[in-house]
Image (cartoon, rainbow, N blue to C red; front, side, top):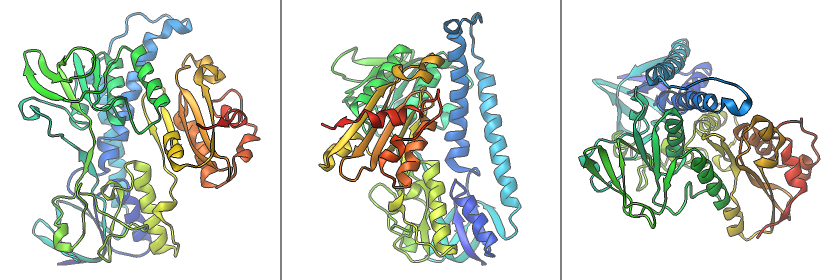
Amino acid sequence: MSKFDAIIIGAGQAGPPLADRLNRAGMTVALIERNLLGGTCVNTGCTPTKTLVASAYAAHLARRAADYGVSTGEVSVDMRRVKARVDEVVTNSRKGLEGWLQSMERVTLIHGHASFESANTIRVGDTQLTASRFFLNVGARALVPNLPGVDRVPYLVNTSILALDRVPKHLAVVGGSYIGLEFAQAFRRLGSEVTVIEKAPRLISREDEDVSEAIREIFKRESIGVRTSAECIRLAPDPNGVAVGVDCQEGPPQVIASDVLLAVGRVPNTGDLGLDRAGVAMDARGYIPVDDSLATNVPGIWAIGDCNGRGAFTHTSWNDYEIVAANLLDGEHRKVSDRILGYALYIDPPLGRVGQTEAQVRASGRKYSVGMRPMSRVSRAIEKGEAQGLMKILVDDVTQRILGAGILGVGGDEAIHGVLDMMNADAPYPVLKWAVPIHPTVSELIPTLLNELRPGS
C-alpha cells in the first residue's frame, strides 16, 4: 500500500493547480487520471472547440471580404487541415501540462482508474493507495438521451464530432443550448447545411427572450435552420443518413440529415468511483453534493469541478481549486456562495453574461431598472461590420448594485468583465456610470447604458 498526504482523482482544470499548491506546501500527492491530462477543457471542450470556431470564423470572414472592399475569390475549406490544426493545439496544451506536472517534486502522476475501497483507501489496478485527504475532480461527459431510435442510428456527441476530418453534408443538432449552438454555427461556416432542433419553445431558454430571439436572428442570417417546440424528437435510419422526427408546430415533421449531433446536456463521471464504499453521497443525477467549502458529507473528501454540480465551466473549476487551496493552506474562509457567475456563449458574435437575467430579477420581486442598446448603435460594431446583437444591464433601484448584464455582440465575452469586476467589488453602479472608457470600444457603451436606465417591468 502506498501512502500519500493527499490524493487527487482527475487531472482536469482543478486537479493540477491543486497538486501544485499542495506540493509547494510540502505534501506528497498522488494525481490519478484514467484518460487524458487536462480533462474536458483541454481535450474536448474549450481548447479544441474555440480552435475550430476560429477556423470557421476565418472562412466566414473570407466569404464576406467583398463587404470590406477586399477581393478574394472562391473560398474552400480543407477539413483535414482544420482538424490537424485543432489536434496540434490540443496536443501542445496537453504536453505543456504534463511537463508542468512532472516538474513537481512530491507529485506522483498515476494513469489508471481509481475506485474507493473505504473512506481513506482507493485502488488503481493492483495498487492500493491511502491518504487523509481526497479531492474528486472527475468531470462530466455528454449525456446521451433516451430518445426513440437512438440505438438504431449513428450519432455524434461533443467528443466524437471533433474527430471528423470531413464536413457533414447536413448536420442536425439536437439541443439548442450552448454546446449545440457553437457547433451548429461553426459547421455551417465550414460548409455544412445545419438544422438546430430544440424541444423548448426557444433557444437557450435560461436566457431572456430578447437574447434568445437575437441569437435566432443571427442564425437566420447565416441560413441555419432552427426548429423549436420539437415535442417528440425521435431518430430513425434513412437512406441519406438519419431521419429526425420533430413534431414542431410548423414546418416539415422530420429533418433528413447526414449526421446527427446530440447536445442536450452533461452527466458527471461519478458512477464507477465506488463512492458508496466511501460513504460519499450523490444526488439523483449523479452529482456529488458539497457544502460552501466544497467538502462532501465525508470528512476529508472534497469534490471540485464539474462533478459537484456547482458550476460547469473551466473558470468555475479553477475557482473551486482556489477556494479549497485558500481554505486549507492560507487560513481563509472562502465560500462557493460568494462566487458571482459569469460565462460566455461562443457563437459569433459571442454572448458574455454575468449575474441574473431580467426574468430572474423580475421573479425576485425587487424594484429594478434596465438599460438596453442594440449593437447597431455601437460604433465599434458598426466599424467592424459586425453590428448584430444587443447590450443589456440590470440594477437594483434600492441598493444601486448591478444585478446582471448580457452583451451579445462583437467583443461581448471580453467587455462583460468590466461589469463582472464591478459586481465583485460590490460597488454601486454610479461608480461605473461616471467612468471614462476608451473610444471606440464596446466597453464604452456600458456607462451609456447606465445613463439610460428605465424602470423594469
